[in-house]
Structures are given as structure tokens and as C-alpha cells.
Length: 134
Image (cartoon, rainbow, N blue to C red; front, side):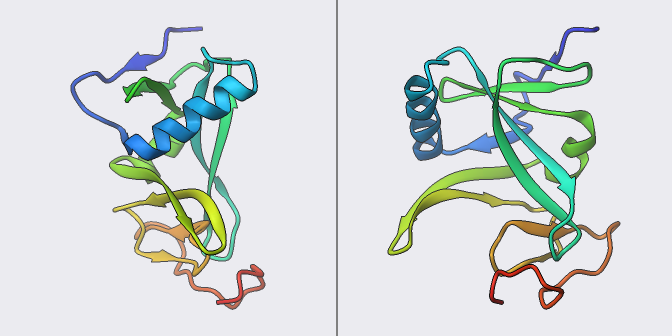
């Protein structure tokens, strides 16, 4: 297995300070202060693709890694083509708190913000049973 590629000069994804604070807190609560945040894209959702985030301790061949506000963020090469340049933020509203991804590559997204499509992907839109209520 090769060593993951590190992009020090170019942010593959931007993590807000608020999101980094929440992630660091989560890592500490789970007793994994040295783990990384894996951000990925998988097929599914009402718009064709959906976001995923997970705490990971393993690196895979082709992973891209960046350090944002003291949090190591890892993205696999397949996901990178869909979410490069995105911003991950943590927002709180009357419904509670959660992570929000602002993706400049998304041309359509579900009202819930968890699924999207790109120009190369299928035309998206809610109404296909995603359950987001939009």
C-alpha cells in the first residue's frame, strides 16, 4: 500500500473552525484523539449521490489528506472528484446541530442537504422517496 498523498498547499476541502471544534470534541469523547475525519461520497439519496462522514483510523491507497484547524481530513480518490473545494461547517438551529457541506460541484441537491448530483451525474430532485419532506 502506498502512503496517502498530502495536499499542504491546496485545501481539498475546507473545514470551518466551528466544525473542527466539534470534530475534536467528538474524537476526544470517543477516546480517539489521533483519528481522522473521513469525508466521502456514495451512490444513493434522492439526487443520486450522498455525503458521508466517519471517524477513521485506517488510511487507504489513494487517500488525500489535509490538516484543517488541527483536524486531519481524508478523502478517497473517487469521492474527491465530486467534493473537491467543498466546505464543511457545523450549524445549530432550532432543530439542533449538525454538519453541513457546501459543495460547489453540486448542480442539484435535495432539500435535506444530504444528497446531490453533479453535471456529470443524473438530473436530481426530491420527490423520489428520500423522506426529507421536500
